[in-house]
Image (cartoon, rainbow, N blue to C red):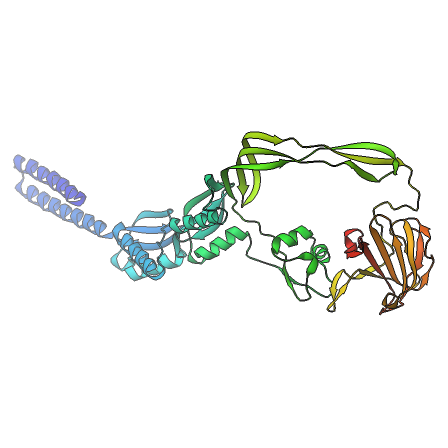
Length: 469
């Protein structure tokens, strides 16, 4: 339309010139030459305009790279639609066209134009095959990419179901973090399936370190080896008793830390106990450091209406709406001793009984129960009383070899076995830190070491609750 208009304007102008010359009629010969010349000019201009029109084209660019040279933008759009259809058929995903594509006017002959197959190839190669997906955002960070918003919402609903019960009525079920969904364009290999994304979000990690329990290892020793707490190992291994680990047992060292925290709010009415308070009174009838309950405390009861706020099923807070006291608590009274303590009276705490290296822990060992810990050192190394008390045994005792037993007169007894020499006798009162024997290898022993036991009311308990090696 623009070309025809331009030609018409030129034509009208030339005709006007010819008519002016014809009206003068002074020189018919000049008129003839002039008219012919003007007609040639018209033909040249028309030819030039037509050629220029035939070269009109567009460059489709992405980040400075030419994807195609087309006669019209519709040619490129058709190629994009072909790619979209292919991706939808093969992967069931919607192909995402970048927003930074530029269309630039240019000139090009027909042979310089990009054919449809080449355009499709260029689109696939230079656009990295990005497809539309839904990102699950947690506090502004993209945690996982899934197929679509429906899949993302299904994952979030499954997370909520982990921590709610059909028997309870909830005022609110949501998340502690800011959770949002955002449509994005990503490579196909970045998109995860529903189950994989669910595991990632709920576990917080794709990796899990496994430790195989070795002979004599305790939960405490494993925790110290990996710079963890025993509580961390317990949290990562629900159902496992850390005091009864078996040789070869596999222990997870990953503590689950979900990316998303399910927060619930439920209304309940319940009766709960009211804890009693504790008062302390000084008395010279007890040694310093000793305590005795003189009045037993009694818990009270109250009836409450409350909102329970839980995070991942664990009570995080509560909002009491109403309360009614059913019974008042009774204060407990504890007497604290002020009388100076003799050096040979137990303090209630233990110190390390010798220097050395821990070679065997408490628990099952070689299919049998090991009721203490072994601390290796050279023969003759000093063994001292872990706390003050009275020697109740000091002699040779079968597999124990030379054995010293101290009664600490507070429910605790300590055993010191395999000694090369015994330096005390039965009935002696010893103070905390007093030398009582020497390290040896008597009895059932494979080398010089101290076998150390702690018993409470006759029952062996793990010494590593009281001493550290």
